Length: 148
Image (cartoon, rainbow, N blue to C red; front, side):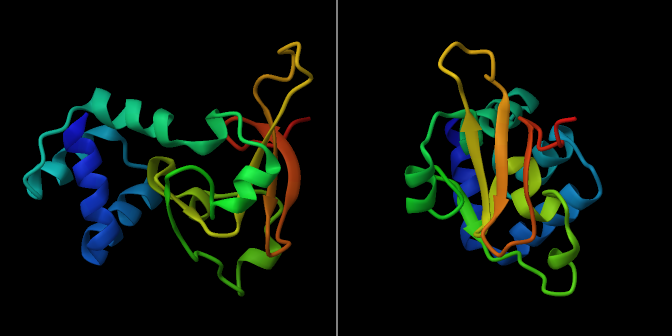
């Protein structure tokens, strides 16, 4: 797992690598492609490392309050960047790839996910997704799909 953390740190400081990860994400690539890209940069990671890190770093899998999420841009210890596109984002009705980045590794600075709970666990995987720029505000599942 240490190699995947180092790879993510490298992506944070290497715009070329981050662009390659974004290209993979936009094409729908999976963990195998990340493993191959990591190898190109000298990192030894496995599919399991990539998938485990995605779930560990995804901030909406935790139990942060709205105040805690607002206190950290995008949530958790994740990388964030301004992904807001004034030509596209105002027309959104829900979050999309650009809002969370590849494998949930780099959220848009404006994307928020608030976990809903009634303390009995019956709402365990329901969230309120909000764009701080006003593009969307809806309730969805843990993958970001709107609830019926």
